[in-house]
Length: 252
Image (cartoon, rainbow, N blue to C red; front, side, top):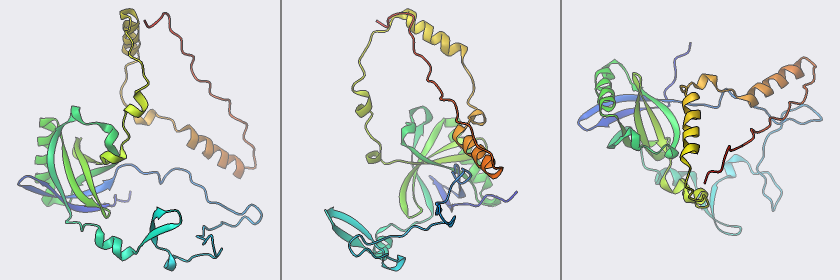
């Protein structure tokens, strides 16, 4: 098996403790089935081209730059070198700013997960001290770093013998819950109804096991590809009917 390749290497600064660490991708879509666009008539793969809508001429990569729209068809043009100068340089440090009780962490701010591991034998002792201190205190570490040319906040938590670091969405990126929840009425629930719901929960208790999750889309597409290669046709799948919602009595 090929060893995992680190996406980033640097130092986890935990007060007076500094530990060399490596960051690895925690979730990836690279193994999903993907398609290329092809020309139906020739079977050749087609390529994407950027075309100037006024001249109708293709624009090669050398003449493409980024532009921020300030008005209709008016842009502030930004050169790649200008962006590089504006982005803060990385000091290769995950600097811990605060510790947050795990029960207080709002997962809606979670963006991408990464695994954080010690980088080399010299880091093992310091890494273990940090990990076990977080575990014993039942907290996550809020850290900041320049990752992949962006200044990011990360929430670092214990997982087994390692750490998991989630990059966090900024506050302006997370929509207010009131946008979705404001229309929900306040209801007084009957005790009998609540007891029934609790009973259902108790009888359906389980454990979190992602290996049991079925990606029906991927499975269906894989079967389609196999069938096409074998010269077969796929029958239309039956529509999955949503469960019927019924209440034995009124909520109120």
